[in-house]
Length: 473
Ligand SMILES: Cc1cc2nc3c(=O)[nH]c(=O)nc-3n(C[C@H](O)[C@H](O)[C@H](O)COP(=O)(O)OP(=O)(O)OC[C@H]3O[C@@H](n4cnc5c(N)ncnc54)[C@H](O)[C@@H]3O)c2cc1C
Image 1: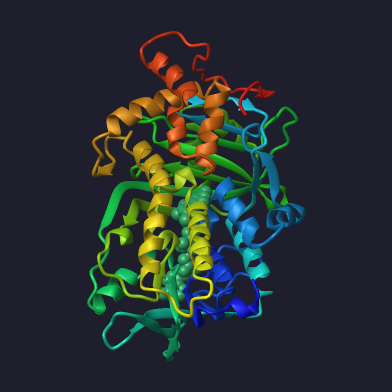
Image 2: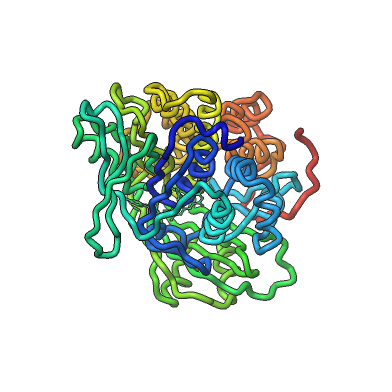
């Protein structure tokens, strides 16, 4: 879209320069004469994690839905990443995933996935964004509040302050402000200050602890996988381990404990935690690998969804995106992809506004409604699984027990039924809606298993070998 189409206003402001902020800025630059990203941190120059995105030290998977959006915004992005360090894998064949008490089957597939550290991904998006001449980036600068019109019906800009002690205050005027400030977003507070209600929040508390470390992989000629995820089986086992390949031929390893069963950050305790897991595979894989970094820890208290879609009043000229709306238990790896899908939704909405000369009062309402539809699936997948632990606290939807009965049996059939594995992955990658879980070819084997009939795919704890895909289109 060319400069002549930048009709929606002179200036748009984005709060936060992480994945959500960078992607949305790329969309806005086609509709506004200038876009300013305001970021509290300074950006890392050497692919190191930064303070404002502390989760960046832990494993980060990006699913197909997210990859598709980023490739659309930055053509050829992941091909380029693969040439400069990302590891390209077949998500089905190269992943060894123990989940729901079984290892999933590993049929060869066309589910291409890209593996890298979070800072590597984000820094490369930033690099591509820097070639946009109408995007300005203010680093070490924090947004401290909104400016609004005298009747408070419209957000007209933001107040900013140097984030490193400098007590310089400034006001920046804008036609649109997008809050991509992550889970610590202050929009609810700032809205209240100008007479709006805060959005209601739904929370499901899981108290997860992460401990992560970079390794040089051990030499093992028999290794036939690239990624390992070994989940503890609820309700007794709370310990999970991940091995993700990242740029530089290294492994990023994260260990996770549910419900305050946090992994330790000392060398011995770290290995002991791995050894205590339900199966020995994860421990055996890391025990001879060479640590290349200290162990860093991170705590995640709760899934949280701020229901902006349910507010009856909202000011014109303001939007909220990404973790600022919803955060999910990170063990399911959905956050960045959800963020990207929301950006894509907004892209489509703004394209429909083409020719308009201002942001309409309806935009936020429509966007929040569409974002809620995107969030529903990952929210359901994350919180349903969390409720398999009885200590998880939060309001359990009425269907929780029935759905979990079904999902558990479906997961168990993933050990042999390639169609079910494929369906599970397609939903995970945002390629299909979760209604696919109830397709007759999934439903009947699951019900048969649930009713005690012997199925042709019996669950197994044996780590599977790669198979040629035999079915599914
Ligand atoms: C341990 C862990 C593991 C995860 N693993 C995965 C995974 O495997 N896959 C996945 O997809 N997702 C994962 N996630 C989720 C993912 O990290 C988030 O969904 C994603 O980072 C959200 O991006 P965002 O841009 O909305 O917010 P954030 O990444 O949180 O960024 C917010 C940005 O805003 C800036 N900021 C905040 N307030 C202000 C302000 N007032 N002024 C200026 N700047 C401000 C911050 O400095 C920061 O740069 C994980 C999360 C955690 C905690």
